[in-house]
Image (cartoon, rainbow, N blue to C red):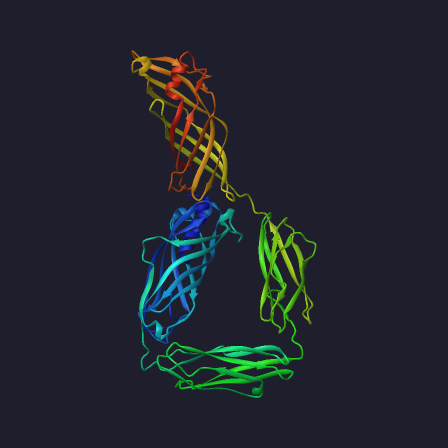
Length: 603
């Protein structure tokens, strides 16, 4: 298995981990255990698509009623990681695997199809040192869901795709080497499997679930509003019960009720229906104002619901800048690499905010690589993208300055810090034994091949260089055209002319080697004697053999386990092989030769 596959398998584990979206209702009575096993394919750096298997366990009722709210919903998964993955992780110096994922699922009822995103946390799990498989758990929560009269009937929850953000940590807590230290993988379900987590019924509300009024938001805050102008905000009134809800009245009362008005069309609400109350604040006097919106209904438990209203009248509405962070620490990253952070600039005032200038001090380690900040409307925001590049191990700092027309804070600053660290050597030595054969088309003969490859794999790029040493071999072939079906035996030697190069990308190994083919001797057996008919110290191919081999279609090459390589090549003519050189070329030189190799890691 690829040393990268290693961490990737660690992620396969986590992938599976995140490949679910369970719905476990907190405290729900009559919930039944629900279990689903899923297979997914997840693309990983260098080694390509890898399979994962996850077991998903939760509790969910077989029947819910209109008006029921299920959730927030717990997610529990367990993923089995195989021993090959464990070995790979260890090879990459990974001691702990952790990360986050977003699992994508869907709730389907008779009236709607709701996409659900569930964030999952992969619990930090120690990579065992002892041989064998190991388990990695993950947990998360899906959002709550309320069922309405339109949902009545059969419903189901299905598990779909997954986006995985994985981290492999070394013993010192830093990311593991190469692209497996931190990466993102977008996983998909394997075709042909049942991805239904749970099927359940939604029924009409019974006598125990009458009218149930729900109001959102619980408070309306207008903030600063310029005198002589007005702003409107909405309040949503819903019926989460199983019977018709009658809205008896909607009123505004309180100390400053005269400065607030409301309008609505709320009369009766069937189960699951909602209506909108428009609340308007007309700022007539300077200073803070407050009132209370009261909604009366025939909800037997809550006949009256109140929503607090507030606003502040100002002579002239101004912009008010607010930053998501006052300081940004980019942390310690590998020297020569870069990382991004985003700063959100908000306008919480009542007038448009004009951003006049965004700048940095003279430190080239930090750059402003993107911004859409120019005019920010009230209650809106914009983003500034900052990039830090670690050019040395020395701590680096800078100051981001934002200039605007905020009357109170015309200039705001954000302190930026970061540092570089030695990422270490990203190369991994790989030693492989070689066994296989090559078919020589000109004679129809097959030569056995053995040898070794010693290479250095760059984990960050997947490129490698190395030395391929093939052992001397020999093959037999008939030369009937000249010697009446006599059998000739040719001794073959391989002389590398340059290093073997190649790549390991998406689980496919490609390699290119250049070697001279030498033929020290060719003999025929006649009357029990081996009669030399060619060869010699100078007998070799005129041009070096350009040998290209690759993983067979559909095969995955795993450095920890090895794999197969196949290829074809042309064998140039021989020279300096004695009087019968031209005869030998008839049975050795030519196109359409094939090679099959089986590579295994050396101890």
